[in-house]
Amino acid sequence: MTEPDEEQAAPVPVAGMIISVRTRHDVVITDPEKFLATARQAYLDLNPETTEVEAFVANVHDAAYAIIERDGRLVADEPLHPPMRVPGERVLDRPDGLSPAGTISEIKVDVPCTLQDYGCSLPEDVFARPAKPFGA
Image (cartoon, rainbow, N blue to C red; front, side):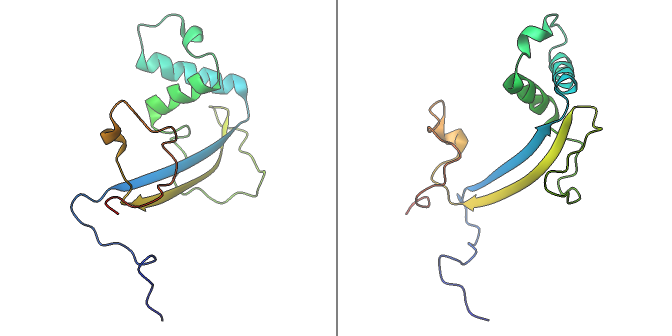
C-alpha cells in the first residue's frame, strides 16, 4: 500500500476548519396535481392564516420551496439511502406526485468562507467549488 500524497491525504480536524456539505436530491414529477396539492398543504401548514394559497403556490419553485420549508426535503419520507432503481424507473403511487430519482452528497473542507460569513452578500454561485483552500 502506498502513502497518499499531500493533496490526497484526508485532513485532520483543526479549530476554525470549515466543512461544507453539498447535497443534490433529484425527483421527477409524476403527477402535477398531486404535487401542487401537497405543496399547497405544506404552505397552509406553515401559514395557517392564509386563505389564498393558490396565489402563493403557483409554480414549481413555489411548490418545491413550500415542501422543503415544511419537511426539510422534497421527499422527506424517502430513506436517505433508498433501494437502487433501474434507470428511468419511476415510483408512480406516491401521494405527493413525486418519484425520488437519486441523492448524492459531497464534503469539502477548508472552503474559503461559510455561507453565514458572507452576510447579505452571497457570491454569485454558492455551489461553485472553491479554487483554493481557506488560508492558502
